[in-house]
Image 1 (cartoon, rainbow, N blue to C red):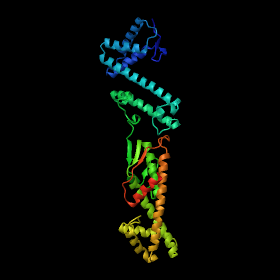
Image 2 (image 1 turned 60 degrees about the horizontal axis):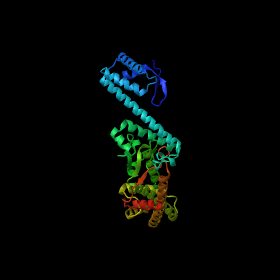
Image 3 (image 1 turned 90 degrees about the vertical axis):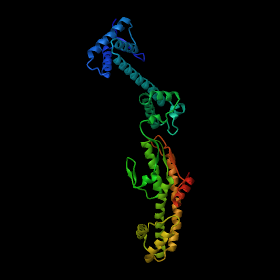
Image 4 (image 1 turned 90 degrees about the horizontal axis):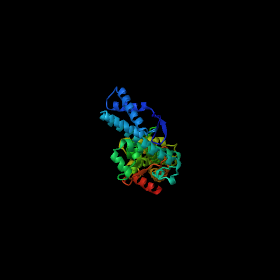
Amino acid sequence: MTLSKIRKRDGRLAEFNEEKIAQAINKAFRATYKPDKEEVARRLADEVLSILEVEGEGQPDVEHIQDLVERVLMDNGYVQTAKAYILYREERSRAREMNTRLMKTYEDITFSAAKESDLKRENANIDGDTAMGSMLKFGSEGAKQFYDMFVLNPDHARSHREGDIHIHDLDFLTLTTTCCQIDIKKLFEGGFSTGHGTLREPNDISSYAALCCIAIQSNQNDQHGGQSVVNFDYGMADGVRKTFARLYRQNLARALTLLEDREDPESELKGVMAGIKERTGLVPTLEDWDAYAAAEREALEASFGDVTKAQQFAHKRAVKETDRATYQAMEALIHNLNTMHSRAGAQTPFSSINYGMDTSPEGRMVMKNVMLAT
């Protein structure tokens, strides 16, 4: 009888094409370094066809035809080629299995609400019902299937599927490191790039807190897992120092303007403070500032006379204003860390800030206010 149809794996009927059998055999020859075997491949395909005609099955299954190809190769002494053909079949079977499983997974993501789908609730930090949340799940599940089928050791993949082991965050297996710690002090020195623009070194506690959040958010988009600022209090203390020095200078300028009836002397004070720092390394500080205050009085005496009262006023006001500015900065940081989105807008960052080690006055002010804000 003449074959005209074959039955595919999903039950559909398709046109029988002997040439496809010959092509598959020829691929197996090439895989075993036997080129120029087209004629042999056609002859073996004819042999497969002859067996099918003798069997008399009007619509043979694809799997049965492939079994016959293996048998004919073995019977004709092409053992290595038969093995290559078997491996080729297994690879195709794995690809089909992956596609079938993946399509069923995609169906669940597309048509199920998160409250009805364990898959869409797998990550509590992602809203699986949003467009971007669903898109992330499409990518995540596709990556898992690929690693399961083509990357992992088959024994490990099977153990993971059966629950004997668990490979955490399998969807990011080959893509990136995970859960990095950010050295915020090193990051802020000279500024840093987010990949879309460069940010200069901050000069105020509010900028330090804001850029800390931007660093976490930016890193979330480039790397998997959570981000921890391991030296948060040390990093933010630098911002407190800069803020205090600026507020002290501004308050001292106001006091001198009132006491001495002078035009705004802030520009002159900038030069004096810069000179003291260059000569002695001293700057205005929250506590233990007597050495700086003495150096400043000496530098200002010729122009302003005794500035002790003005210094005391400026220091007291600057401490109070710096404390308030630090609280506002920490309040904004807590708010941002708990509301900002990353990873295509579908996820709130996993973020940790570590504090409690910096015992400087500035570090303690940071710790006090971040706890109050929290």
